[in-house]
Image (cartoon, rainbow, N blue to C red; front, side, top):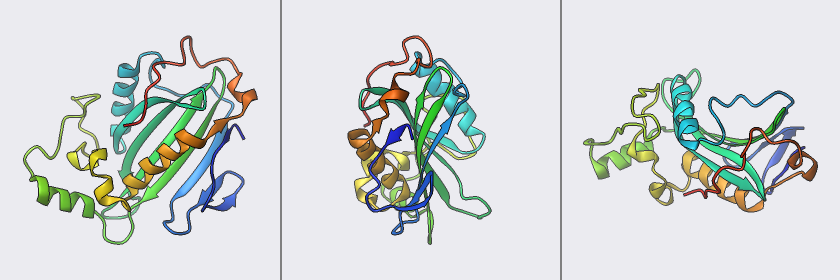
Length: 205
């Protein structure tokens, strides 16, 4: 597969899927031989963030998106939240790394769902911070009113307070991936997705 990553603590489910038996979080690694379906130019990160926020808002909410590097290979990292399917409450948090090429892409993704009593992070933080200013305009697309709101509770500054929350687990996993994952040299050498595909070399917050 195009991306090598640390599977310590994971149980392999099939050829492309691993599960954390302690949390139920699911990691998947997929390859597509189609042109990457990105809604805007790779070179223009503000435009890409805006369009991702708009499209993701139809099903949930884009929490963050960044250009990062896996080894020395450019990748797009994003975190989204969507409602738990077929449930009256709860959310699934998805962190994904997309390595786009001119005619193909590889995606490494973690899905972490709320289990048991849902909404605890939000409830505790609303009690601490208050309702005033809880829901915020989306920083990438202020006009978006998505299916799920962009709010203060998803800020990474609160991850340490809620280390076992699915969103915190997604971000912790992402930082580990950035430090340890590597892209297969043959895949890395394929023609880039677009001119200037490297973009700015940003770091996760």
